[in-house]
Image (tube, rainbow, N blue to C red; front, side, top):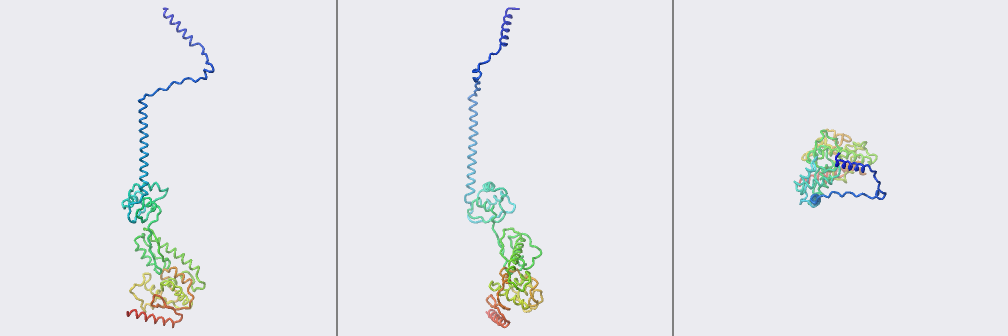
Length: 381
């Protein structure tokens, strides 16, 4: 073995011997002393600068976006609450089934709101779950803001139309008026309700209301009213049931339009019924001849008409006719239920729009002669 190799062998042996030497433990103080952590690798100044620039860019975008959103919100809210472009009141119709976008577009087209998009989106944000803008006709006030318009359409307080039926209208006349009203919809029943079953009154409704709804209101209203007044009737009336009660009230209704006379007219007919006398009422003759259509205005009642045989001619039949001749109102029903305290048996027109009443036939004939003189004088003039 060469000398250099021997020296290397000795060095390797010494190193191997060093690895096999036992590890001397540290003292307690040294064991508790924290070891130094290596310092982190420092980024280059160039990398740090790029990151800060990107972060600043992102923050700037967020701030600008927040300012833009805030500006848009402020503009939309201000526009939504400021007075609108209308200078005069206007009517606006929300069609059934129309969505918010359609309504907003129609409002702008009609000059009621200035911006349909603002109205649409702000209104949608305000509507709670299940709430909608309701169909109907509305009166929009001049200068109404979008908020005012939305509140009105949401409330459903649409324009209400009215239709009136005077006391004494027949069912046929009621149907004719319903059919001619352009704000109502739907067909009328083919079969007419019974005469006297519809309450004369003014009814309010929204455009498009079905005609049958009005009829049902009239029917229910009349039934309630008849039941109520019948319960409060005087005892001892010569009327056995509500049907006869309504029939007599319809005759009273057609005989006079003066409210103060109705209880006295009712008393005359009730007195005649108690004595078995015929009612001899001209309106019953007319109904027997012309039915619910009514007598033509230019057609007088002839003496021969009083002798014609019809179920309703109370000059020819005893007692009451088979049913009402019109739809009586509350005043006529109350007059029959609580008639005047009188023994009068007759009445005739007095020339002033009212009637002259009499207890005896002689008094009545004198009143008739007086009326005929007045009639002749008026004809001469």
